[in-house]
Image (cartoon, rainbow, N blue to C red; front, side, top):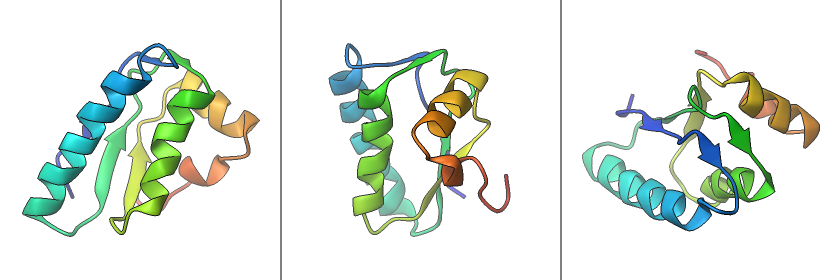
Length: 93
C-alpha cells in the first residue's frame, strides 16, 4: 500500500489546480516507489463539488490502481449523488 494522499478539506473548483498539482506529484512519487494500490484518504473532506470529483475520476485514466479510504460524510454524499458508489465500496476498506 502506498503512503496515503490526504485530500484537503475543500475539494472545489477554487482549489482544483492546487490539489491537482499536489496529487499528480504524489502519484509520480508513489509509482516510482511501487506499482501497488494507491490510497487516497478522504477523511478531511468537508466541501466537494464536481471539479473535486473530476480530479479523482482522472485517475481512472492512469494505469495505476487506486482506492479511496476513510470517506467523510461530505465525500460519501457527493459520490452517492453522482453515482460513484463504487468508490465507497472497495475491497479492503
